Image (tube, rainbow, N blue to C red; front, side, top):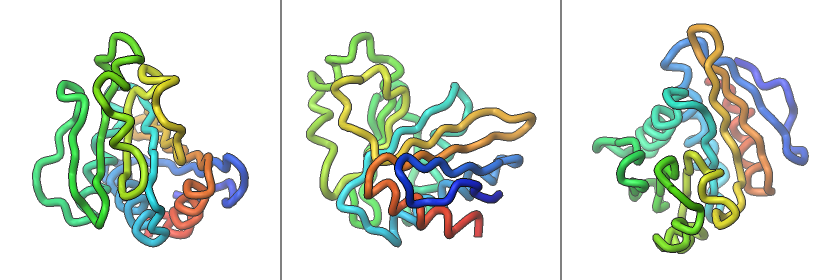
Length: 171
């Protein structure tokens, strides 16, 4: 569970093996702790991975770390699930069901991004080019019986969170 690429640096990629299901939860918890430490004004987080890769599990672990005790559902059918946590409005989007990218603006989702908000998006390519730029991308993939994660920092806010995440390293 070590990160091999140092951060901060432009578009740094941090990697972590997730051999057990609770390792995905640990990554989510570490990510939430890193956001809490850095306290960015807002954050746009892309979650990439196949169906069943652990995207909602990661979000659930983040929310639990911030004290959310209610249910955490995948937004696949609702498109959006929102949670007030840790001084932020956390919005979890899933654009899988979008038939065309303009639906993003038609639904008024752009207004949900910005200061005071953390937005985690799944199937983001289906909302591009309308989706605001990402600060961090978390790529989850299957690896053997477990998973693998790559976290790519794209902005100063993303690099600050990634640096704090690198320091956590599963602790």
